[in-house]
Image (cartoon, rainbow, N blue to C red):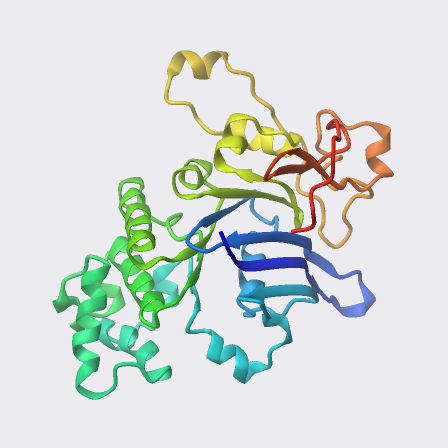
Length: 326
C-alpha cells in the first residue's frame, strides 16, 4: 500500500508568558497512514491526541517536523495554499452542536462548504445537498431545520455530511462518538465504516474508548504525554500489548464475561499525568510505571522492534532490532 500521510518528528510546543518553559503538547511524533486505512490514536485525556490531529491539518501550526500528504509538506505551505488543500483534508469534531452555526439551517451549513470551494454552483447546489444528506442517512426535509432541532446523533451526521461535502481523501475524527449514547455510537461508527468502504476514505480516529478503536481501526498508535509509546496493527495491540502504559490501558477495558473479568490481572496506574511543561527525564512514563528501574530516569527510550509493524518505546523490552524511521 501507498502511504497517504507521513508524519515525521512532529512537535507542537506552546510558549508560556514570563519565560516559563513551553508546554510540550506534541513532542516528536512519527507515524504514517496508508490510503484507505484507519489509524486509531489513543491515550488518556491530556496526552496530545487532539492537538496532533489539529496539527496534521494545520489548524494549529506545528513547532517542528513534517506532515507529508501525497509527498507534499503541509507545514511548508502558506495560508492560501493550505486553504486549497482543505478540500482533501477534513475534520469531524467531538461536539457536533458546538461546531454547527446555530443561526444557519442545515441545508446552508452543508452548502457553505460547497460555496467556499465553488463546487456544484447554481441549480446543482440543492440536489447535491439532498444527496449528501441521504449519504449519511438523513431525510431531505432536515435541510430546513436548525441545529437545536436535531438530536445528538443527527447533529453528528450533519457534521460528517459537511466533511464529506468537499469530497476529501483524509478525515480526522476527533472523538466523534464520545458525546453520544452508546446505541447511537454504534450507528455512527458503522456509518463511518460504510462511508470509508464506499468512498475510499482514510481516517485518523482519535478516541479514549479502546473498544470503539478496536472495532474501526487497522493500526493503533498509543500516546502518552505528547509521544507515541507503542504502535502496531490492532490485533497485536489488543492481543499482546508490550508497553506498560498500553497494558494498563488494555486492562481497563471491561470484558463481557463476569468470570473472566473477576479473575483477570489488572494494571492499576498511580499518580497523575505529569506537567507537559516539565516532563520527567528519561522515560516520561517512569513516574507511573510499575516496572520502572533507576536507568529509566537517565535513558530516553527508543523504538524497540518487536515484529514487523509493531514497536514500543521501553528499555525493559528485549531489543532485537530497530525499525526504520516512519
